[in-house]
Image 1 (cartoon, helix red, strand yellow):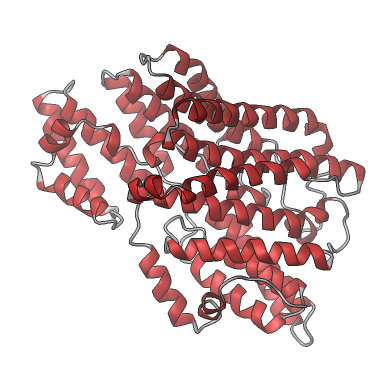
Image 2 (cartoon, rainbow, N blue to C red):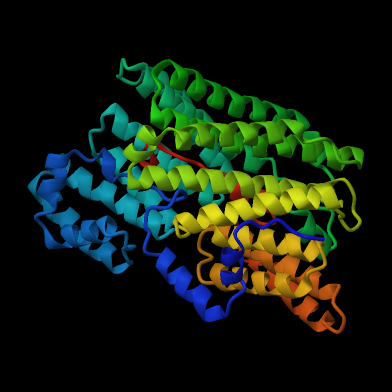
Length: 474
């Protein structure tokens, strides 16, 4: 059958030799502020930022971030020296607080979540914070706990954040609505992953019934999707009232997350009933996300006014949404049966179209959101299902090359595990490749084992498509 994977020049690029992929990946790392990282510099007043920049250690870090280069661990030492200087001058001063906030951002970009949480706790204990700083640091702490895999604590902080927003000083309805939507989204995502829906392929590989008790979580899943819907509606209603671009972008991201929450409910039902429950509500939410983004793209005046980070946010959300739709079409049926999953020709064509669109859009932002590995795995899975083993193999290998370079972030680890498992399945169905199938299955399980001690261990690969977003990315 013919697959619709979009731009064929793009496809040839992604089945090219390994050196081209590594070159592409090096280029992608020039973007430091991805949609899964915490960015707090925008909360620092300009005069304070100018003041702390007088120290070379701070100006060097800021220059790295401004030029889209990622800071390194060595920059933390310089930030700590600067922090000591400003603390001696005035322990309650704005400069000391700003340097500590900068440290949180750098630690988050380096995926050093424990240290980021510790630094946030120190800021909250020692510094006088305004409402906006309290909101941003609480959200940053929620993110770090979420990615670390401390879901219960993340739920607690995000729930407190939802209670805090109505008390914030700010009369502007857009200001309040955006923060309400963000807080509700954060709480919903923390609760969503805490449901514990495990990856069916991992369960089958380890011959464990990971999801045998999941049917008891149906009520929780339904409640979470309602919270997601509330977030989307608050953002959408206020965007319509004020035509605010940031609200529209946040609304699209919220709808994309809402689709995953609704699909989770369908998968929980499917697992319990042993047949695939329709996922129409999830698809409708994803189409709502795409509709909002396409409206923005059609307005040339708005499009030309977008800043660099806003463009990345918009395109990343669009690519992620198409990738989520692809995942749903390819892998949902595995939750309705313990046997081998199968996808009919019509569904595969649609999944291939969505995967191709995700790939094309991701290339436009040069993988600034680090989702290329996930998308390539989905494209490869489409080719594997269609019987194009050689093309699928090239795409899987390229995906693994990209993903194996950075598995400090749990989403990238989930994506790497998924790539290796699906490549193992390809080899298993390929004559004389049983040894490779066994090898890559073992490597996939080693990725999963690296998450032992974290609540991300065994978690469904669908959830690497979530986006715990904040105001600083808009």
